[in-house]
Length: 228
Image (cartoon, rainbow, N blue to C red):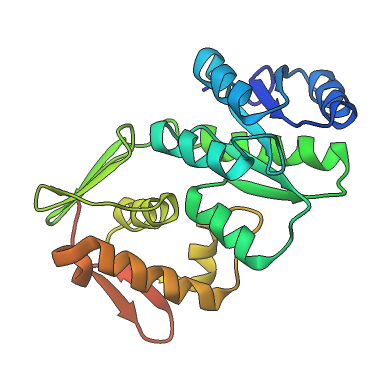
């Protein structure tokens, strides 16, 4: 992962005028850029260039933006900021479940997009010195492999569930408020009530280890246990 300035940004946008403006603003801030106008080319460039971050419009020629995001998340944790005119809550939640790091809704200011890019890269770069593997009780988490296990059994987690589990396993025993857990979702977080649904789903996915996530009355949730 490169530094905030000088990193490589892949712009996936089928409207040439918008892509050119974004490219100009990003380059003025010291970033390098690549551009793709459809999903097929976007995935080709992403695999070949391994950008530091992807700016991804949802409404692009096939495969569409959600399918591109799904493919990226199956293979890596490259930060992705979704650009969209689709503001329905279900689309936002779907994007978060697939692992988008942030959203910018159209119409937007190019300066706002650049600011979001910098913020996401700072957040990601801030994690670079952190441990890549965690173990708490029977739970194991490998950030590099994007894998979680309970008693040696691989767990099928969504990107959002993986992030929530990472937050818990990095600070076992800590009582997280719902507002603190919203930080996992980035700039476009859902409301606090949605956290309860995500925790319920995470517990179910953890199987025998689900009981390690405890409810702290009047506060939020914590992961019981200590780091191994």
